[in-house]
Image (tube, rainbow, N blue to C red; front, top):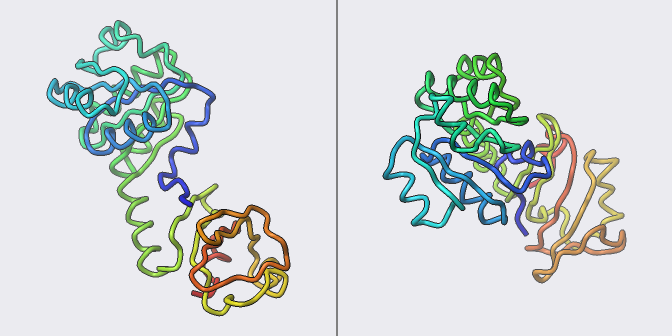
Amino acid sequence: MNLPSLGFFRGLRTGSKQFAVIGLGRFGRAVCQTLHNLGYEVLGIDSDDRLVAQALTDHIVSHSLALDSTDPGALKESGIFEFDTVIVAIGNYIQESIITTLNVKEGGVPHVVAKASTEIHGKLLKRVGADQVVFPEHEMGCALARTLTRPGILERFELDPDTSIVEMVVPHVFEEKTIVELELRSRYGVNLLAVSQGGKLEVTPSPSLRLRKGEMIVVIGANKSIDQLPV
């Protein structure tokens, strides 16, 4: 029972089956591999021939091209302007990142997600038309801090900055109690979505279900409420 761990994938729910990723560094490769494994057609683009070839060899993309993404003509010729969603995964080269994002938006791509390395970088990306800006290093840092301080929470999927769905080990004080006895909504301000027992996920479980040691539960609620749950 695993929840998505990359928050920015929320913004990729466009109904499209095709995605283009510009920049095949570590972040870009991770995006390509995740989308490809989910069954989407992925076009990978980078200026480095070696990275382009490696992406094809590793089977993390459907197609891959080597080109200069700061050149609007090269982007048009590649057919990238026909994609519904383009992820600009260039984070360390700010000028190239901004120019590429501008080129893609001016080319008519409806939804552009861009990686930013700093707050100023993110503001500039928004100014040139990025529909969504992500800060992977910041998000991973926050996730690590939560993992260290809340080890009982195994996975967290943020629905928005204030609300999350989390998978967590049944807290010790919840063991051998029924769901109705816990009064999760009135006491803690969260709602129980599912319980995993014996490897089987039970969605909207019966209020009379008794929670056991070592089981997993999935709850939804405000982050401040989730962070106050017992461990």
